[in-house]
Length: 225
Image 1: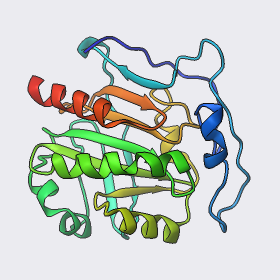
Image 2 (image 1 turned 90 degrees about the horizontal axis):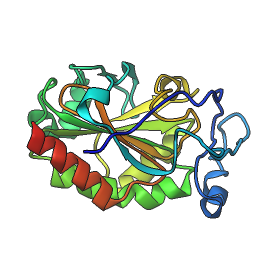
Image 3 (image 1 turned 45 degrees about the vertical axis):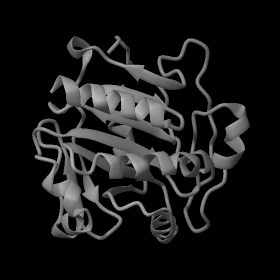
Image 4 (image 1 turned 135 degrees about the vertical axis):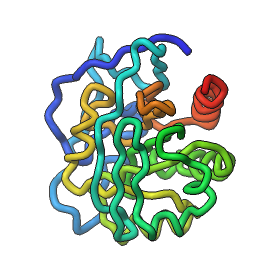
């Protein structure tokens, strides 16, 4: 896997902001009713360290995923931390038995997807994530969503409609996404981080992830152990 870079962009937290081509901004600028605040759309400036698309990181350049913990959409709790990716509630384990049984906490690849039900590009990429979660369910790969500034009822309805069953961390105020500064900008919806079995970020995608990007990186990480 090639080298990459990830440096802080210096942007403050902006809820409901997106880093996407202009043709996609309209879809992400609308938000579910009942969620406080107004959208503030931004795009990366020239020379931004966060270009759209896939960036991979060579092993020496990989950094641990910051600890993420909080409530989940199903009413449980979830903690993600380097070398201890999974500490899910019983409700989450029951929701995804195949994935939980096949994903030892210290030896699983993690796919962390930042999304929201009000974001059209997130909806467009969702079939890729659902299909990948099913494809890798019997292998040491874990999928987790980070649901940004969303209406929980709308998020649950959308996930039920597409058949997504993996855990979803709630991030109503953007605080969890802010912890990922240096990996993705605090305005990146959608974005995806792929974390190796040692808890280090091996790749990121700014914008909607594709099947080819996701499967290629995950397969490489599985092959490398």
